[in-house]
Every structure is written in structure tokens, then in C-alpha cells.
Image (cartoon, rainbow, N blue to C red; front, side, top):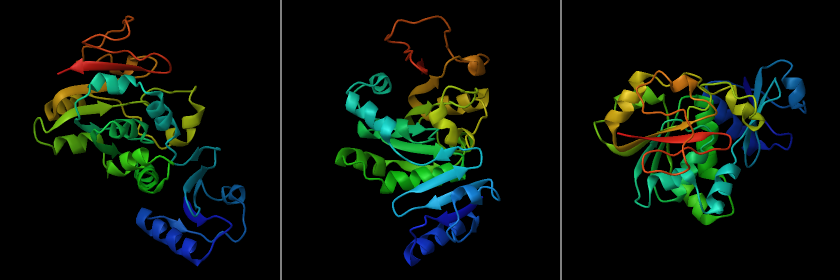
Length: 258
């Protein structure tokens, strides 16, 4: 993989691109009027710096960049199952699977204090920069994005370093533990995502760290979680109950009380 600039480059943009290459430990290449497609003939991926954004172009056609569009739709809807699961009280939350940051943004927009973990260095770099720099056009969303603390780490390592009952909620969205062919819009992320499944050890650490709740978003099927010591039910559940919530559309949410 390499870092380069957009065709409309200047000295400032080249300088910023070189800094990014140095921070990520990858090579910077001058654009020299080459198309990204041509560069992908030599390199597996090209990280292109524009004046206001970073875009990762991959040889297989996958594209990754930060945009809070999904989060903004959820915020504007006025009703979100994840927020309803948490209630009105403002809470401290560890989002153990940041990805593109949609859940973290929604949580932060509701006033929750969010720490978001991401195991991919490149995804963390692109998304954390986006959270700080992207202008959504809505000040409340911008403030929410900037308030999120992001950390490049895997969830198990981070959780092991936390003291017992140190946060209110621990949240997981293990979206790539199963292959998701339907999610074409996530193709750029899926090639970089951590596909490791939740384990008994991770769940045990999450329960130790959380004061109130462990929330796991279940997608399509729960095959990857069926062997865990969780109170997960596979039969249909009526929308909202005091014990659990299944969010039906492309995925399901489930609350497991600690």
C-alpha cells in the first residue's frame, strides 16, 4: 500500500501526505498525473489524500472513507433502538468495535461518554481523523463526533487493562464474524475488519468491566455466539421487553443483563 495525493495537489498537500505515510509506516509516492487505477496495477491499495478527506482505494474495487451518513439518518429519525436500550441516563460506554463509527456517533449524540476501540490501524486512522475533521453541517453532530475518544487496540487487550466495574456499558457489534454478502456499502471496511469471533474470555472481561450492561448486536444469525455463555434466545421476541431487544431489519440487537 502507498499514500499519494489527489491530482490537484500543492506543496501543503504533499507535506501532509508525507506526514501520513510516516505515521502509518507506509511509502509515499508522487502522483505524477497517474490515475489511481494505474497505480493499483502496481499496489494492492492506494490511500489518496484530498484537501478535505482521505480515501482508500483497493485493487478489488473496494473504497473506504469516513462519512457519518448512516449515523446522521439514525439521529434525525428521533428514535433509535440502541438508545432506547440505554435509557435517558447519560452513561460511560466502551464501543469495542468502532468500525466506521456510526454507533459511537449515535451514542455520543445522545450525550453518552464514548470510548471507541478499533483493532485496524488504518481504519482507526481514517475514522479518527474523520471524527475530528468532518463537517456534517450540524453543530450538535460535529460536537458529538469530536467528543469520542478513539483508541487503536484490540478489545481484549484493552478490557484486560481496565479495573472492575469501571464503565457503565460495554458494547460489541461483531459484524464481520460472519460473511455478509448483502452489505456492499461495507465492502471497503470488510477487507480490513477484524473477523475474529467473540470468545468466552472477551465476554468474561466485558462483564467484569461493565457496571450495568453488556450489549451485543447480533447480525442475521447468531451462529458465531451460540457457544458463548450468554442468555441469547433464537426464537422471535416481541419488539421491546425489559430483558432483551431484537432489532429486525438487516441486523438484530440483544441486551444481556449482567
